[in-house]
Amino acid sequence: MAQMMVATCAFLLMEAQQVSARLGGPNASEPGAGAVANASSWQPSHLDFIRGGAGRGMAYWSNASLLSSLELVADPHSLPGKMGYEHIATTTRYGDTCCASCGSVSTAKLVEGTGFYAVAAAESMQSHGIGDGHYCTKDGSSSGGTTGMGCLSCAKGRFIAAHPMSYPMWAQPGDAIFQHEINLVVADSCPHAGNEAWCPSRPGGQNNFGARNHFDFAHPPHKFDNYYFAWSKTECPHVIKERYAKLSKC
Image 1 (cartoon, rainbow, N blue to C red):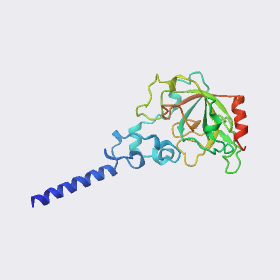
Image 2 (image 1 turned 120 degrees about the vertical axis):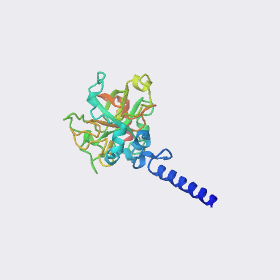
Image 3 (image 1 turned 60 degrees about the horizontal axis):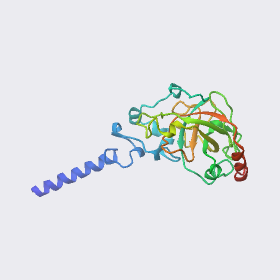
Image 4 (image 1 turned 90 degrees about the horizontal axis):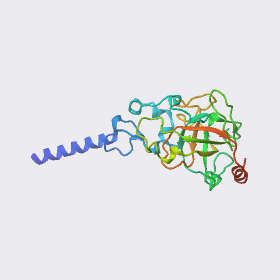
């Protein structure tokens, strides 16, 4: 009888641990993938925010537990400043691709050896695309706080030591990612469908974090973590234009 009671208690304890893990308790390996029961200890994974990740859609952010845990910064205009640049954007990452929407260009080959970073601009920043509307885009309307950035648009800027969520930053304010100006070129599009939380669909529209401009980095700098980006539009240098002409089908 005693052995049976011990076995029963052990079984119930094992079941409780499994349920805890399924609900997002300490044993859960993928807390960002579903409902979160213990929001106070939850931290998102960077995998949540790559293309196809749960953090790209609105359902992820509508979870009341997440909202209370992350305390979203809804207005990027409350940041310390633009550091002398003209605009503020939110940022994500998605990984290099062989065939981005700007003429099936390779994002890695386009910027290799140039010091530039290839990005996808939000759908709201682009227009006049062919096919599904995202291929070989031109600059969208610069209105309502949105800045047009179609294929082969360039910009310079710096990351701000802040991101839209309240969980601790992976980098420190003095790290290189916040100290150096970088250059970027638009090689792709970030469509609203599938990226509803980050990439607005129309000029003047805001994303889930109050920003009207958004860049999705193909291969961001070391210690990147969805930081705000202060930036100004620039003329693309000859080396980028020449490389684009060779690689893009636009």
